[in-house]
Length: 112
Image (tube, rainbow, N blue to C red; front, top):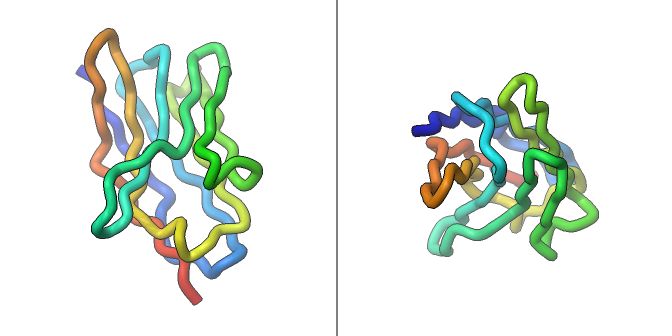
């Protein structure tokens, strides 16, 4: 199993920035961030492989950077130019073999 602990969420004004962190109990090849807004399905934000290859949702591309520190078993999500529609619970996900593991989520609210 993989345990994941997210942090860094909060309330931010439109146009602001946040950096989310996810500490994993072990490194896996593929890690990512997903989000779920009220009344909506969970959706991909960004993924990153252990080699540093990244993938972004179109809605966040150019405003968001995913990165990881393999020595610290940590993946980051730097979000800039935040919009109200970025409001959601953000979840960290780790894939190990055929299994996906999820963190408990961290709330991001973008509001003035």
